Amino acid sequence: MNEPQVWTLIGVFAAGMCGTITLVATMFVRIMKTEFASVRSEFASVRNEFASVRNEFAGVRREMALGFDAVRIEFQAVHGRIDAIDRDVNAIYRHLFGIDRS
Image 1 (cartoon, rainbow, N blue to C red):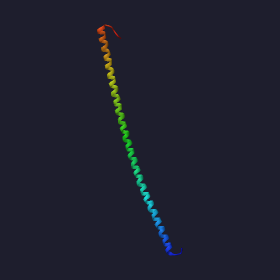
Image 2 (cartoon, rainbow, N blue to C red):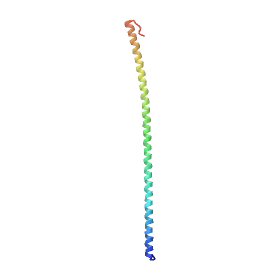
Image 3 (cartoon, rainbow, N blue to C red):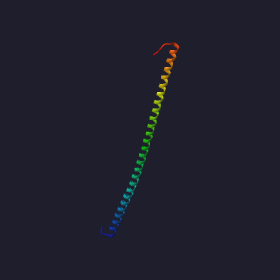
């Protein structure tokens, strides 16, 4: 253990181990930063997709509301026509038979 070559080899191995550990740690940190950045971008794209889906559902709701209003208007028109037909049938009945059906 007193030989200078032994101490030199111990120093070289220690320096090599420290260098290897530093290199691996640096590479690990870089990889982790890159992966975290990609995960953040994926989350951002998912948020954008959810926002677009939310907008689509809002559009569907608006269209359904307009459709329901149109259907309601059509039913009111049909109801008005049925009332007119009922009035006409009563007039025809009174004219033909001379009897009031009300």
